[in-house]
Image (cartoon, rainbow, N blue to C red; front, side):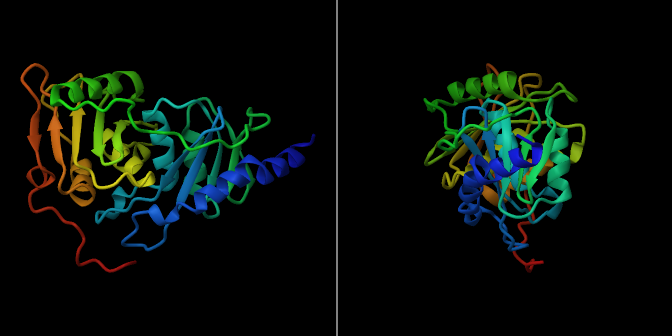
Length: 270
């Protein structure tokens, strides 16, 4: 089969089916400023797929693009290798650039809205979406902190900083994991807290109730400024528990973490 014929088969097969799923998810996007919903899906080696939606912030530069959202969810969930990508809209240069940053993968565009790994061969038939929730949700703060530490060590992708961070976001649907994911292009790096918040929106998990955060290499760490901003906007009523290892977790509200924060209430759509 020629490369062109192979691409046609992919575009009309698993990636086409994934594209239909992705387009149905655009209403989960959080786009109060652009009002331009976007969604993406990552096809895994076992046929499952990972959704991602665009998440905007009143601080515009903190936007989480749909594809980055999906990719970082896959990392936090320790998912199998991604083999394909489908987008709800025609691909943009920034989405192609992100794929080029993924470790040990070379991608080719198979249609205006889809990509496949060069080495993928025949793609698996599309299965159900990846379940991101923990099998057993820790109820005690100390247990949740320990699980966040485990996630950080096991799944964080931190080749640049070597500073793993893990978190659990507790939602009505279950506990969503988050880890920090770094790339050579620092602008595409996503912290654990924003990773989990983005996953929760992609899966329509409901309003966040609490977050447990752990930094195994720094017992006194707190969320960075970018994460404080997103917590204030997306989880304003959640309690943030910060692991203090042996001293009991410390708690704070998003307002405590970012007093006088800007939520964009007076911004018009752009």
